[in-house]
Amino acid sequence: MYQDPHRWSLTFQTYVQLTMVKMRTAKQQRPIRLTERSIYSAKYCFVQNLYNCGYMPHSEYTVLTEWFQWLIENLELNLDLIVYLRTSPENCLKRIKERNRSEEAGITAEFLDVLHRLHEDWLIHKQFEVPAKVLVLDGDLSLHDMCKMFDEKKDEILLKNNSHSNCSLQVDTIS
Image 1 (cartoon, helix red, strand yellow):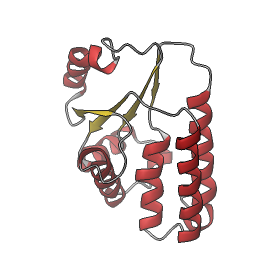
Image 2 (cartoon, helix red, strand yellow; image 1 turned 180 degrees about the horizontal axis):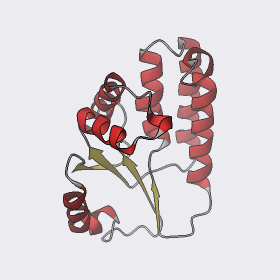
Image 3 (tube, rainbow, N blue to C red; image 1 turned 45 degrees about the vertical axis):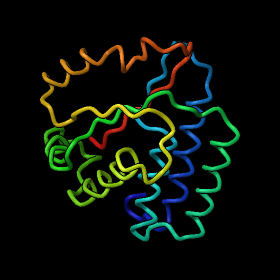
């Protein structure tokens, strides 16, 4: 997909959508389902980026949008909470370089900046539908401080005071 996004963006994002719907509709074994991303972040951030950059033609964007609309209107894909680990693009890039994973080698500061802005547009400025409460956490903290913050916010993150028997959370972060 990254070598030829004009050719593969629709195929890739269709598969992402399918995979996320399968995960979300699978029988839930535990009271909380935690996912790194959701069908919503795929659409409002990653598909939107491909379309904005000209990698996805309008016709393909329309097809994915129609599928997305049908899925959220006809399947039980509701989220109870979105945890947004708000991290600066600079810090994301620093962490990517520290991890030194070959599959992340081509990620640029510009790409991270665009994804950051799209997440901000969606989750903070609400330019797209936000399907659940958003808990914004500081992703720029050190690992030690993030662990402390997660411990302090544990009940809120795990929806301890929620009456739902099966909850679904999405954690959104670029890095």
